Image 1 (tube, rainbow, N blue to C red):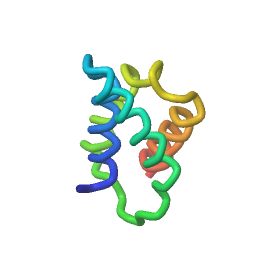
Image 2 (cartoon, one colour):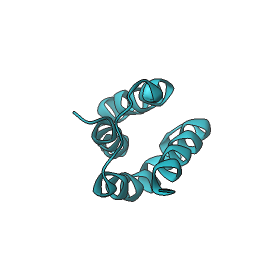
Image 3 (cartoon, rainbow, N blue to C red):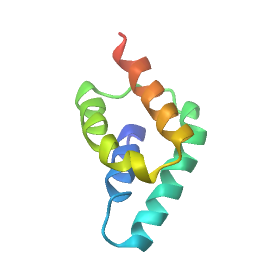
Image 4 (spheres, rainbow, N blue to C red):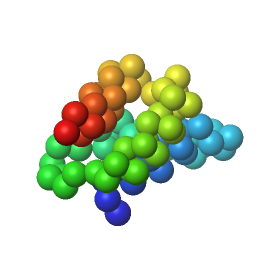
Length: 80
């Protein structure tokens, strides 16, 4: 799975009604963010758009430093 797809799935699951799944997803997104730079592939514009759409709902449930890092990554790829 492409790394942005993984982040998108995690960002959406953070908002799941099942708190067990949501807690797992929060941990997943935080861990992914800590390791994202190991992958050298670039996301597709549609993947960035999907992530940008999912992130606002997930934002209140993620650590602020993780949200800031994810936004920085998205901005880095959209600066073309």
